[in-house]
Length: 583
Image 1 (cartoon, rainbow, N blue to C red):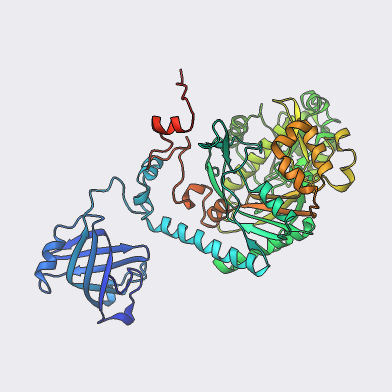
Image 2 (spheres, rainbow, N blue to C red; image 1 turned 90 degrees about the vertical axis):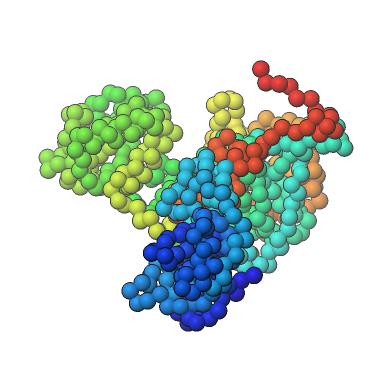
């Protein structure tokens, strides 16, 4: 129907007869001559209706509304030297219309198809088909498409096979709640929708596939936020006969390839931190390394002071850590930072200013000159800066300071928005203590192998056990996790037993995996990388809904199609399901 798109015509096309199709983006009447910006996925082209050229087309143009779908036939002409629009790809030309056809009329849209007038979340999700017409949303969808093209190029280059795993699977505990699907032919039994392809990709390694990947949708029934959806997409891969270093090297090469192809950026080598180092320096296992501003543990120095509050916290197993932004703050500014820390769970925040004479504040009198010098030396603090202290349980202390660190970096302009800094965090604890359930639970998942030195006796020292597992982090956001898998059935059974699955329950839920390993499972490992998060960060946003065509709202609902919805009594009867009404 068209000879060109609305983002294609240039000065070289002047005098050509063309046909364009698209939506009426905007309409302007300049003393009888009507100008319309015709929009499609590729861009905008200005089309002109002049009654002296064609009265019929001009008459139709007088009654066109926003978002009407048009086909316009005409001649390309130069706009004029002083009328060029440098912001448009087609800014040098316009099309003088000889004939126009209305392909479809549009009601007045409930939201603007305009990046400068973005509607609220509810309206955007309800009228997603209109929101997706915006150039920025089209650009995000194209970015996602291009990301996958170059990623697949890299996987294929390295002998991976793209293999689909099932969407209807056995329900197994993997951390979040399963979405379940009732079986009509097996009354009372249910499939689950996969939270990840974890078990199947391990079985593919047992099957000798050696190198697998796919781009699966993973489904988890969990509370939502900006970087979490009930449906998210991974770049998932698994490799046999590899070490953790080899998997990380492959992944690093993958992202270097993607960023070079998509953005023309040469990424530097990804630094590696142990989990212990990351928590000590950054207070989080997802460190943003675009700026320094490190945390300092000063618990040992505090123990030598006369400040009993801090000393007691340390005696009770807490930490006293501080951060030293190279900046002075007014008392009002410091009070705002105290309020910020309290809003994130702190009991308070203490501070001391660095001066020529040492440290100054109500806290400083409890520290001798010698201890003040130790604090200054430990933190590398300079005159005119401030030491900010948090004292609490280790987990709380690190969490609050990690939040404060990022807040300070934002306020002080330390973050370059167009910079991409990757890092690895490895050597995570294999287990973490679940206080709510009063038991040990896997830090990542139960299929991760302990480091060799812990395999024989991990049950006796669970708090010390380090797993052969790691995370990939970009600009403070976790992109994915990986590990070397447990390929020895007896070790897997011991881990399952330790976290509370007896032998019978373990075989009921995971018997097919355990049995498969009895036939010779090779050493293997892999990663699940967040596609949505990766594309969102490249697009300059932390909200993955901006790069997903049809996301859900915070209640895991789709306002556009009304899902989830009730089903008919006939369907319920076929599935042998009775609905119990909520009181």
